[in-house]
Amino acid sequence: MSGVQAKLTIDTTPLKRVFAALRSVSDDPSGALDVVGRTLVSNTQLRFEVGAGPGGVPWVQSRRPKVQGGKTLVEHGLLRDSITHEVDGHAVVWGTNDIRAGIHQKGGTIVPKNGKALAFKGADGRPVFVQRVVMPARPFIGYDEIDNEDVGDVLVDVLSRLVGANVASNGGAA
Image 1 (cartoon, rainbow, N blue to C red):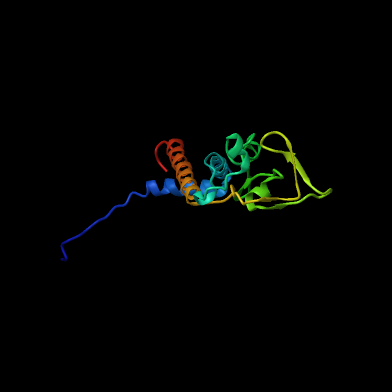
Image 2: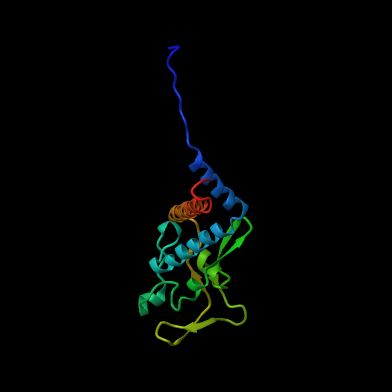
């Protein structure tokens, strides 16, 4: 075996491009996190269209859609459209500041603060007076397997574009 030699040459150029892209995202993750945030907002808004929370758990249908048609939590779309995101350093936060979000997300009982009854329009447009309303939880904010896959795809896409940009800016060499 003294006369047998083996030589293995590994071109590390592709790895250098990947590491450069990872460094770029690590140094300034705001662009990647903004794309992640937009993806999470989109996925959350889609839950209003399908009427199911994270993990695909269907929401209990509300009375209005049963009587008037439409979708639960989407009479005018204000709650759905209030979903937004914010990049905060090395994190992304998404959600809503809509005052109704908490009761819909977690469920609970609504009672009058002042007075003896709650008043609202019924499905037929007539006033309704009740002492309390029990709201079932209809979670819309959350992170599930679909979000995980979509965020993974987004990050792969961001890194792929950065690797490609690194190749272009260096004339094909890393």
